[in-house]
Every structure is written in C-alpha cells, then in structure tokens.
Length: 102
Image (tube, rainbow, N blue to C red; front, side, top):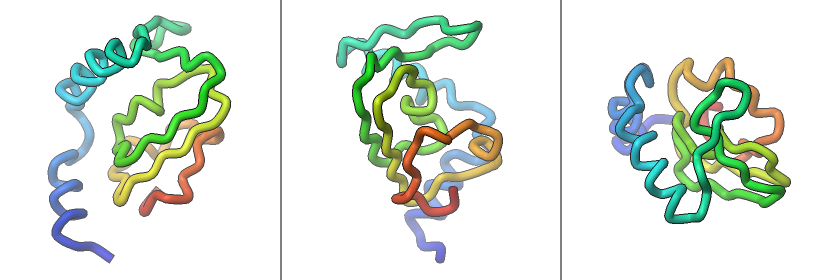
C-alpha cells in the first residue's frame, strides 16, 4: 500500500542512478563514527565493521550497510526500499524483515 511518504521517497530516489550526494555525506558520517572508507577487492568505499552489528533505520538503496564488511549481524529497516538497484545486491547477511518491497 502506498502513501504520500512512500511516494515522496520513491520520487526522491528515482532510478537510483545518482546517489553521489548521499554517498558523500556517508563518508563524512563514517569518519565521525571512526569508520574509515577502504578499498576491498576494487570496491570503494567499503567500511570494515570489525565483527560489529549494525541497525540501519531508513537505510534506503544506498545504505552504508550495503557496503559494510565483516559484520556480525545487520538489520536494515526501511519503509520502502526502492528500485531495481537492490534486486541484484547480495543481501544474504542482512535481515530485511522490517523492509517493504525488498
């Protein structure tokens, strides 16, 4: 069921083709949380969570959780995960039980 908030969120992300603004903010936020962006097998930025657990509320299609490595546990809770952007992502270690549309 759609509502105005979900429609706004879907319009905001569109096709997820340009997430530069969100990802740029995340690099700043990560450093404030003492997480350094790293290169892992040619993928950057990747954040080494060092066996920690993460709860990402309102993660969206460019959640930092999707580029986290070495997680003990992960929970992504979002009212409306959008687009084909996530369809090919390996989310086998992520609990999406709180997500709609995943």
